[in-house]
Length: 327
Image (spheres, rainbow, N blue to C red):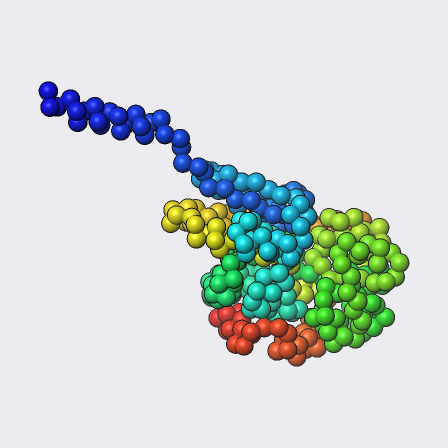
């Protein structure tokens, strides 16, 4: 009868495994920066594709509306402390941890999105950014494009050259943009995004720099009248993740997250390729479109380039970006 005990023991083990509660699924909270709009919001296209891919791998995903978890500073604190897994954030927010990423907001530095992607993904700049940010609890998973290259919107008249900016007061994000506007012969004034409609309607500001989709998304077409298609800079958001959360994942789960990033990037870039119709929508809303000539673009770039070396980039970062762009 000595055979009974091991068989019963094996059966008990099987029953124990069968009756044990399932291991909890990995979860991820995603803080959005726009409404859930797959037609008009490139960052939501990224977030949605990322979340849907992870759901197929058993992750539990919860999306939070813009502002539900606070502003940029609050989201950054939550990500760095491991309280929020993923956030679609201003590039400037990541730049506060390490300035290397700030090259992405240099006007006329990149020719197009493909050049930016090559520098980031193929030529190592995303890895370089993360060398610094992960030590502070934040991983930059990717960069989500939010529309075509940023251009010049204003309420007064067409802008075809730097000279046309002379009588315009432009809404600025920060002192860096004020310095840029000064080199272009214009004046900048810092205005929070929530105050922009009132500023444009009362003359506190006459225009702003943004991707073509922005007036359509935020209902500014009743007072914005002119757009210069200047392709100043790829309009983007930094996709930030908690490094504590990322490192808590198993190797398999991290591979699933990286695969979700690739799926999200692909969906985002495919969406961007379909945004040519946005210019037609701007025209239909009554906004005049001005194309920046190669000569005018060269003039803007020549005026801006001296600022590249004085903006808040760590030592060696600008040269690294130039090499990654040229490679």
